[in-house]
Amino acid sequence: MILKTSKEILGEFILCNHCLGRQFGKISISTNERRGEVIRNLLNCLNPDLNPALSRQNPCFLCDNIFERTEDILKNISPDFEFFTFHAGTKIPEEIIKKEEMIKEKYNLQYQESIKQELNRELGKKVGAIIGKDFKREKEDVTILLHPYDSKVEYFINPLFIYGRYNKLLRGIPQTKWFCTKCKGRGCPKCGHTGKMYDESVEELISKIFLEETKGADSSFHGAGREDIDVLMLGNGRPFVLEIKSPKIRDIDLQKLELEVNQINEGKVRISELRFVEKEVVEKIKNANMRKTYLAEIDICLNEEEKRKIEDYFVDRDIYQETPNRVIHRRSDKTRIRKVYKVLTSKENCSSLEIYCDGGLYIKELISGDEERTNPSIAELLGKNIKCVLLNVISIEEKV
Ligand SMILES: [Zn+2]
Ligand SMILES: [Zn+2]
Image (cartoon, rainbow, N blue to C red):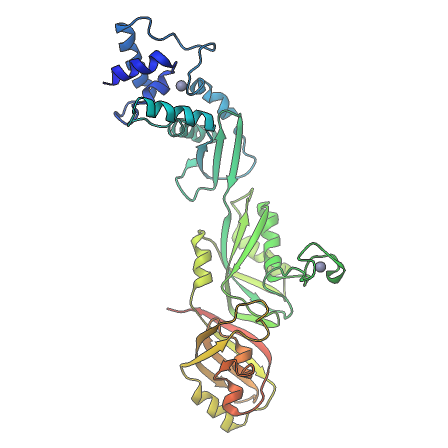
């Protein structure tokens, strides 16, 4: 059966042993080249002038003798960046894939292996030997894409993900880069041609040093929620993942960089608990249920009765909160339900509140009521106008 079909194919097309053997690639475990050679030898014994020898003048119809040139293809690999694991693939011209499909259909070849599969396998093995790195099927540091027919190599360097927690010790710094609302980042008189609303952000203060160290192209900052620009992030800090895109250096000393970031940003931003993580952690910290503790200063002095009233009322209390007036222009209007677990007042101070609640609750509005968009609220409970004048996050815990 194989011999009969092979004879028909070779009667019409010149094929190298690789491409001949590959037409029956999924039948047996031998290499395609060896299988092709065996078939050809058998056929040649039976029909001596069936198929002319392969040569530069008579190249293989399917692959153009690419398997003789694999060493040349691999010479183009010269990465100028650091990596430890790789995955390799090949880009095969459309025209070759079409020829292969045509033969497959014409001779009804159900066990054909594709040229892409064979080249990936053959070249992948050799790439590993040449660059001396480990092949990895997924989560590799770099994907090497060979273009065997164009003498070209492309590298796709995968990002580095670094987890940590940050403290914000100074008010007036946004968490992430905030583009100028007028020019959207291009630069204009309003923003002093910086393209930004604020000179600094937690993101930039942290990522700058990591970008320098890794020679990365760019970075993204993924925070587990965010605090308002005028709110401090104290205590154990807020989880974040810093994503470094196309790093040229991966083996960085996180402890050393932590110290550097903390030294340079003293009094502004502090980071801790740095470690390398996988990409999945980004989604995980973004969707994590957090419990937060806030310290709020309000603009009135509470008497003892009011203090007791607040502490008694806000115990495991559901708060219905429409998107606050102050952010409605940039966030969709919806009602969210978040819990306040408890509120503690202070013995020494008549205007301090310690609030234990779910992440995602707007504290300023929990205090003011936000024109009845937040229910219940502390203002409503006491029947007074109350505003939050100072706010700090003092702890963030993962909810279990
Ligand atoms: Zn071939
Ligand atoms: Zn601008």
